[in-house]
Image (cartoon, rainbow, N blue to C red; front, side, top):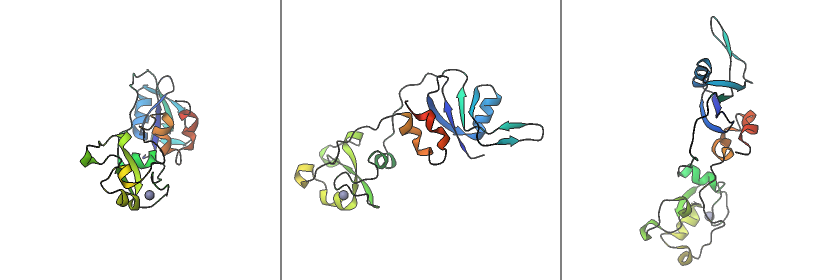
Amino acid sequence: MDEAVLVLNANFEPIHVCSLRRAVNMMLAEKATLVVNGRGEIKTVSASYPRPSVIRLARMVPRPRPRINISRKEIFRRDNYVCQYCGKRAPDLTVDHVIPRHLGGQHIWINVVTACSACNHRKGGRTLDEAGLHLLRIPREPPSSAFYLFGGHLYQYSEWEPFLLNW
Ligand SMILES: [Zn+2]
């Protein structure tokens, strides 16, 4: 029962990932309907239920535009696990503050980049100009598209792909 289920809003916008148990409970309470099964059935003594992979809420839930929380994992993912100074896909990735924190640089999307430890060491506590380094790309907040938000599950649940496109 530890599979993840993609939850679509009533308008089919992907909004959430929940546990299989929660998805089944929502379907039994008629708060959601099955969109994709694909995983066989859950059998109890008296009945059997489809094992959902994608469900859709019966009623539209209002929802603000989601934001990606800033974290090491999400910074590396935004930068495609590539050092933003030398372009290497190094195993020893670190987070670098473009304007160093001791110079007032903030921990915000536009001031953090993925750096290999060699480049991070070379830059030290200096600015780009002082260190003679250049960024491959200007850092930005990642898009909060459904594909970006939930695409990490696709290696496991490829059947979600058509539902993530164009949101
Ligand atoms: Zn590097």
